Image (cartoon, helix red, strand yellow):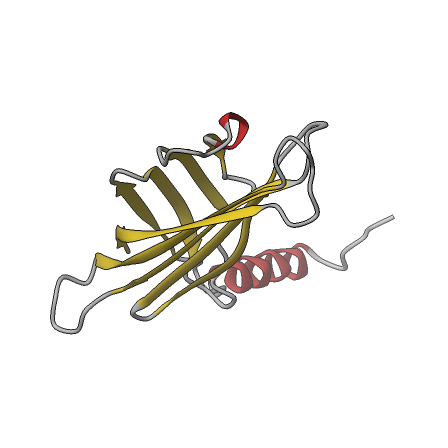
Length: 161
């Protein structure tokens, strides 16, 4: 039994498949990185970004060390790679929000880091600068209902393509 009526039909079908496959839009990718190194925070992040419809950020690697006094030991060094809760990377703006809750049996606590950086008009198209806000919340050893939230602010530098 012949599946295709002729060899020429089969060859035309292969040519059509190749043509259609070659006309798909190429997916462009880029990336960005951000760093903070001050008295309060040591932070490094790098990400892969898709520059197609949807502007997805499929891969993020982020490490945070909080140097501020009074920070609970279990919240001082955190891997935030899987904890990006909000992101915006479009035109001149780069905004990221990381949120990670305390793990284990201790009372509730969390770390939230918000980065807002902007590329200035007329300057290097890969350089972004801005601010960060770091919030550390801890109910403490007694697990009180109020807890304590400490907020710190500083500068962040990012680069992107």
